[in-house]
Image (cartoon, rainbow, N blue to C red; front, side, top):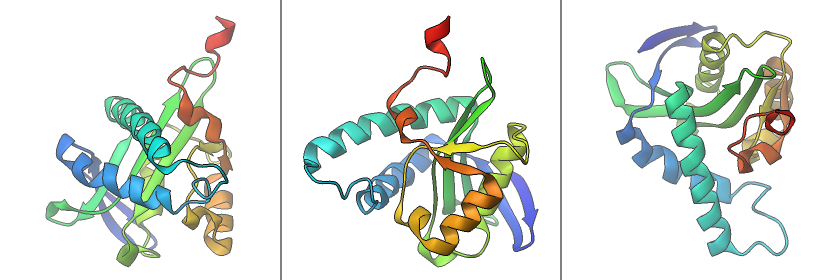
Length: 175
């Protein structure tokens, strides 16, 4: 467990464990259902969720193996999750950072949980201040004016949804 201090307080952050998936997967799916991506003409709900579930299973496994599936929890209570982040970095042939999802419980919004998770990810994977982070899943929170501008400017976030559908590292086609 790491203690991360930001301008909004001190946060307890650790790598996710298997038991955390009982919260992470359903909460991601439930929130994603309300996202702008889901609100498209012709989306067949059952098929969309079946395929999305398969994608999330793969992303969560890869992030967990790489050490980039984080949980922020209450002090002294690692089972009480405040938020989580799923990301990954591919170092070859480029140093590309992907943020697949960051989610914070509603009552925790505005308290710095997402920033603490993102700062931990950036520090652990040597992501420079001027480096872009490509995010692959959209949510209503990312489309809200103030939050969207702040997150995109502070963390250089660029929407890049196509990578969520592949398990191939960037540059696989040139080798």
